[in-house]
Image (cartoon, rainbow, N blue to C red; front, side, top):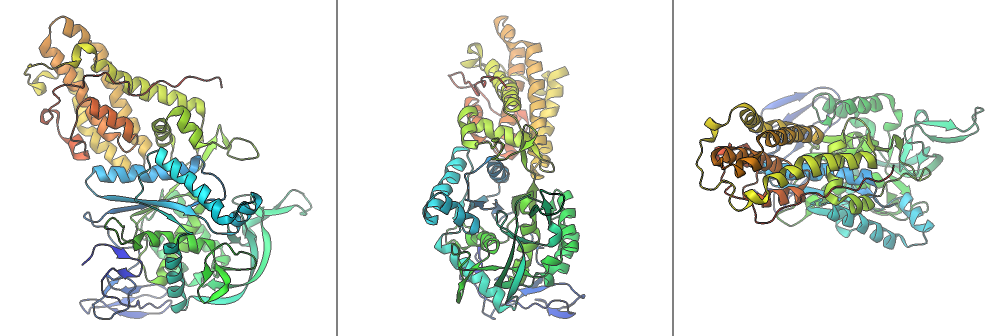
Length: 592
């Protein structure tokens, strides 16, 4: 059976329609003909491994959406949201992409093929107006801004397998299929819809989600409580999706799994589900006269598909590829910012349930970036340009700082002063100077010579303690990286490197070489090289290029996570390269 799922079935596979009922007690027949009774208000889907297909020739499996288990032999499928092109990429966009890239690299080091997808969201009223304001045709405007995202991600080493654009024909086909599947299931109807609409956020809001600001008498501007963006009252004839049907199933999905992480964000979703009556009916189209830059509703060109339904379908578009490297649905993890949690934890699961598709295995949420303690704002003039930072601090330096400083459960604080201190203290001094000291001219040709030494027996005191740290380090870092807590993993790595520097300072290998103490010198250098080797391997998801230079200098060929776990006696580091390596140049300290 082919391993890659297309959106509506396995390629060249048998097809079968889903069978689902909502709010009823139903009997579902599983493959082994056992009967299962599903309690009131649960949503269950009867679909075979061929997900949404149309042939009855294959037997089906009964499976709850979202409980699809990932096989260690299947590619690890990690996604970023597709980024809105109404303006150039900022620091938060890059941070999201780096979280995904680091996880993909980490999974690859552990021996699992990883596929990262990203892209740009190019439809909607906000994009249409942004193009108008700049006097550009929307297609040209989207091409220009989308290219900026590609350039930034390429510069910063984001290794995506697919970059999807919602303006592409392949994506339009996916959206049309998804719409038809929702309509065929009876989940879409046309109705008069009215409410507060926030154009910058591209979403309708309930009364309780808005507030009046500006004047005590209530005559000020009405804005979104969450984003502060202005809202306007809209009354339109649109297509609506019966989201209320799926609220009990979404609540159960949330309660029975740890799908939303960090866990504190689950409470926010639970609150939205319990408090928002506006979630019962969701407008999923806009009239063409108001919004023409988008995908027309199938069989009704007078309506355009709602931008979030359009955008979320990108995760299925990338599964439609004919290449062997195309991922299969469901995603192992969606990585998103907290501002779009509602769309990924409520809207997206509901659309998938209605379409008979399994739910994503994990939604990993991160917080925002502040600048010197203040929210980024164009009006304040403190929006950070990641391209400028990459030029001044290097791409590897920027990667390191964002993944080192970013904490998913709380807002990060960007400061050029703090960034400079981190890079100089940790990359240039702790790591870079350690490599320089251990690859000095006196050790470069053949640092260990022909000296044979029982390293385990020779290592006592600080050397023995350092080896013990190194033995456990890969497992400890692995635990943090698995939980997307890269900052904690880097903390552990830097602690070991600082201890190694202390060990070198105490042992003074340059003096041992001058005095001819070859056996002791061999022990000291081998321990130091082992520390650099292991830390270099573990740093690859964070700073891939810098780590590569480090491992090249040590002539380390085996660089997987398992290689980091192998003991020092298994390694053969005969010598280092003939040239001294300056791993990271110090950043010039500016006046702040």
